[in-house]
Figure 1 (cartoon, helix red, strand yellow):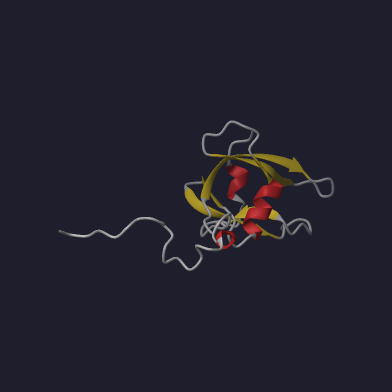
Figure 2: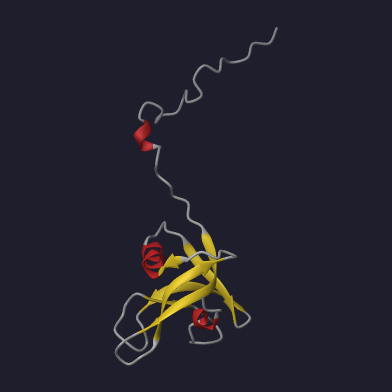
Length: 124
């Protein structure tokens, strides 16, 4: 007769089993989302455009705010974003605005242009 081990405690042998606070509620996973449309706002001084909100995929809601993207991109474990514009897939990053002193300017990295590919996306 073959004896099988008892399955009394599924956490048996886990050093953190007695202290669930160390293993619950902590997410180290982030996701990458495709930005498909943007809402812009024009600055007051030296008028130029900054991204105010973005839509992800086929979403038709109000989208995500600039503040959400800034928070995610500043967080090493935060979500990441990319976009496909001008025939190129590019990552979304934060930089200092090339026109004003804003340091939370949402833009793209590109091998082919210094332009912000997000500004080429459809507006909503």
